[in-house]
Amino acid sequence: MVRLVPVIVILAAWLYAMVDCAMADRGRIRGGLSKTSWFLISVLPVIGTTLWFVFGRPRHTAPPTSGGTRGRRPMAPDDDPDFLHGL
Image (cartoon, rainbow, N blue to C red; front, side, top):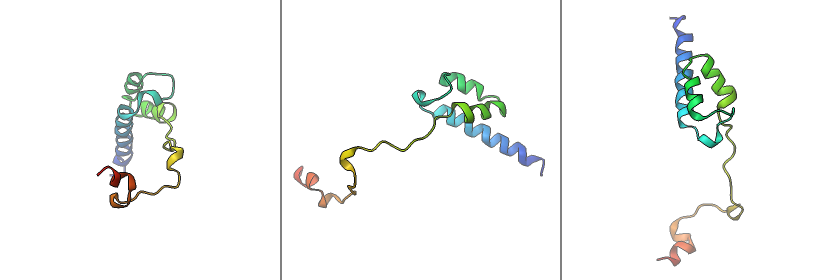
């Protein structure tokens, strides 16, 4: 059973890398290669997965915020003057 744990970990990381590569935004992928090339590289279980996570995976940054909504909290529709004006 102990010998099976590394195989399961490698398989899970490989599957996660394949799905992550397929779902990644084309414009944010690093490494200078196309999304198709990265997907084909990530087919290799250990080497491809490592390369994807180190060199190809997009870095996630904070979502962009607009300056106009700074400090504004969500409110119920009956408290929103813009919503009430549209009725």
